[in-house]
Image (cartoon, rainbow, N blue to C red; front, side, top):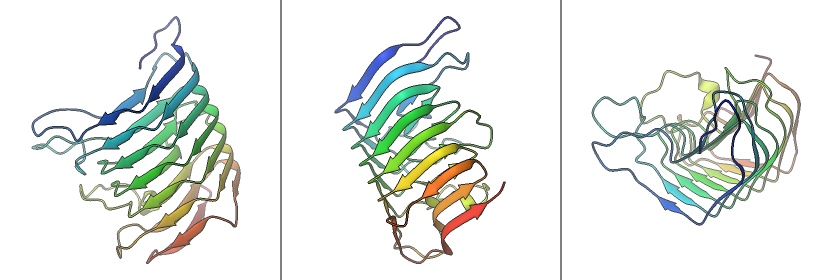
Length: 214
């Protein structure tokens, strides 16, 4: 879903779709994406009940079809991302960044994505704020099959990067693999990030919750 310099669609619902995995030899980055480089926001967005499967191959792989993030929301306001199943992304399962705010990410299942199951914000993102991340299940993410050189902080069940007024609660973050997923939850920079004690984090991780100023 794309916007233009004059505006972006509002009231968009993407529900109940089954997508992927992409075929060998194809080229794709995102299975579901809201993107507007002109900064015009999407208003009232719902992404719900979709089943999205990637090949577990990074989109930068020179020989095989890969994916970046399976569900991506940029410049979205008043949004919900809920009850989706995302598996096998070459990078992140669900990303919300680039000015997105006033929304919720709830009840999603994110499994075996190359870096994080869910990421809020990014290193080049601004204006990401006022988001609740709750009741999601993230299992065996941070697999790094594509041997990415991104920092170890990224290999987590959930990552919050440079975002403000974020609540993370009642999520289940587990890993059964040793040495790949480094953290249950990573919080890098930002302000007002609230990590509730009711997040359930288990498995052989380096640290349950990583906090870094930058």
